[in-house]
Image 1 (cartoon, rainbow, N blue to C red):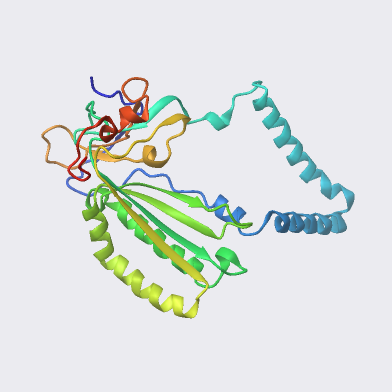
Image 2 (tube, rainbow, N blue to C red):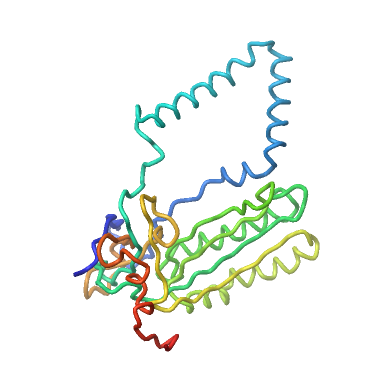
Length: 293
């Protein structure tokens, strides 16, 4: 029995266009977490206290009313959701089931064999070892390079092999001066083409010059080539995230034309995929040409 997909595909409307590349239906990540981690919590509180003091000096005690009103509104709003009086907006987009990502067939259908294809996970990170954090010299320019590279990959996902990305901020330090992009790619050949492409080679030359002038900058990457049958994932009451938040370009069966839709990988995990062993063929004793048992 084939796996049951839980999310509708993204249908492509071409409006008469022919074999043009179709951009990946990604969601642009918010800059909010990066901005909020520019300073430590104590620094933000001190800055807020200073601004409130200046406002009170300029406008008198009434200056506190705006801050008090906004804070009161947010407290009441969250309490109403907490006690189920109003709808919990934080659940919007969450799939209230147990789901697992599985790679769809080229035509967008699903089979019944878990972990049925290989994939590549590529981690690209940067860090600022500087008191100005992400505003340190060189950080913005380096970030724009990465942004341009990702935008270029998403412009033609069939060519680049990009399935999805997510961005994470490290929380082990007082301020989030280290961030990482997680790339999910179709195969290693796609990553090799990226590494040898003109945009990446230009960025390598840019970095070589930049780091000489700004030794406080850090970059790193990790690559994981995962053969089929050797990966699994499960999400319970979760919004699409991680590998579950990828998109696979698909087209009608036996079609050689352009991509007709992007298919989400999340399927019902209530049967056949309930345990890690069920989601991992190699754990059930099946042989793998990559890791012979």
